[in-house]
Image 1 (cartoon, rainbow, N blue to C red):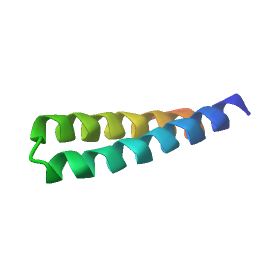
Image 2: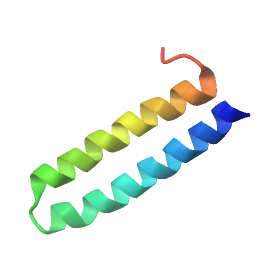
Image 3: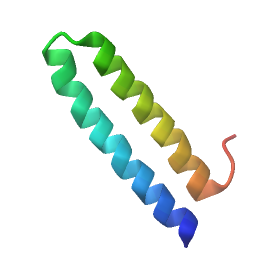
Length: 56
């Protein structure tokens, strides 16, 4: 149960990071946009790890 709650939480954070990256790229703040996308990728990896227990 705790793993699935953590997975849902990290998936929610991933969506927030992607939504924050879009305006950053529109305002030509590429460093901030890339930072948000890297954070979103990390959250996706954590979501996969939480749900399946393994990364590969």
